[in-house]
Structure formats: structure tokens, C-alpha cells
Image (cartoon, rainbow, N blue to C red; front, side, top):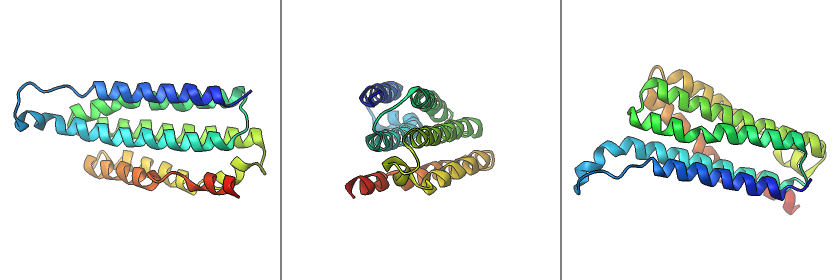
Length: 191
């Protein structure tokens, strides 16, 4: 089957996820800057999650662009990814509301970890369906960035029980690693 439907559905789900997150940003009562103080952790959580969702959307788009078509396995792998990403508004809000305490920060990392694993499963499903010599297989290659990210998420989850701010730094580091769209796919398609 054609890939356009999976792209449209995924775009819609990711747009809803971002909308849910922004609706969690409550308007403070009062008109002074002091009234914004309690919202700072929530806003930091929102920014971090918005960037992560944007990264997934961007890389998902690039990966699906390299695919010719999809099958049922790919549809389910894509839903698996969307499931984990759909939990980001909950853990984002919980983490921000609790001023980055250990358990919410660890659970946030758990959702990022599972999203990372789900993305890996989706990419491997696409490669298996299209073949080892396909554009997508060549473009994804060893997926070193993906493996590094997954490892960093595991480290951050463990570290969250020692220092949750270090964990947040690790989550931000992963975002920085991925903030530039994955050029591997663009490069392979251009060739």
C-alpha cells in the first residue's frame, strides 16, 4: 500500500500531541512577572518535549520519504511509535508540575527511551520490507545516532535518582544531537 496515508495520520497525531501539551500551559492569575515563576518548570518541560516531538516528526518524514510503500507490519510499528509519543504530554506535565523530581524525570526518560526503541523498530521494519540494498537501508545504515540516543536515555533514567537536573541535561543533549535533520537520507536520495 502507499505511504501517504501513514504520513498523513502520523502528522495528525503529532499535531494533536503538541496541541495537548500547549493546552497544559495554564494562564496565571495576576499581571506581574512574579506570577509566571511557578510556570517556569512547566514551560521548560514543554520546550524540551516540543523539540523532541519536532525531531521525531522531522526524522519520521525523512525516513518515510525514502520508503516506497508500507505493509501491515510497518503500520503497526508506526502505531507503536505514536503510542509512546502520545504519552509525552502526560509525563511532560507531571515532570514540570513536580519541579523535576526523580520519579517524574525517570518516567519522562522511560517514555523517551521507549519512543527511541519504537523508532528503531519502525526503521528496521521499513528496511526489512524494502530490502538490504534499498535507499532506506543504505540511508539508515548502522544508526549510530539512534544507538547513542538510546544509551543516553538509559543513563539519564538511572542518573535521575541521583540528580534529576543532570538527567534533564542528558535529554537536552540527545535533542541537540538530533536537532539537525538526519542528512543521511537526503544524501542517499540526492545521489
